[in-house]
Image 1 (cartoon, rainbow, N blue to C red):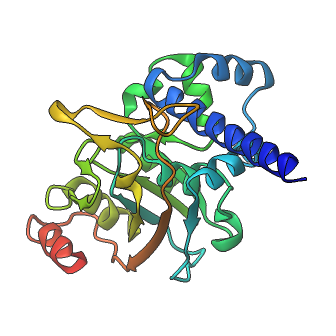
Image 2 (image 1 turned 135 degrees about the vertical axis):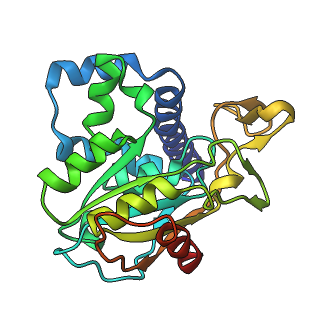
Length: 258
């Protein structure tokens, strides 16, 4: 009986590792194979967001979304995600999938995870990202989401990509004036989203290089992240709508937020 249990747990672990590995490969080389599948089936964001693979992805770390604020459907929101980590596992799992129950915990809000515009230059990887509601992190795309899709939208992004070391948390906030100005012009509430444990899943070595564990053993090096809990919470700051914010208004809001 115990042999069956051990074998079952081993199979579950490998499924979780494969689920995480395919996203890591997507992040690094933009997952052409997955994109080809999506090209065949078309774009179905809700269906893709509810794939079973994301539940295995969530359980590997595991990742948990903790709601601490009531979100109003008459408002738009800009989610500022920290820390970014190497591959932003928490941001993707919470906002790009339904594995942690985003739509159930925050009903009526449509999340759009924003990532580097360069990731959308190739048509096939573009389909893979768009299928999860992911958008380019540029002014044109974000303005479109807020102005054309009505209220009840959220956009997120971050800048700390490689400033992450286990045991340390470096937050890039002082120079985030573009997001702050956009929040003021759109009258979108600014939400700080923080994932405890995001920086623990990879180990940094010299020259900004990193490593995780091997696919079949935690005692070898590889690109599979280490299994460390990621717990995500948020805090909200209501932002007034100011179409032409002054140079003094933006730094003041940053000071208020921090």
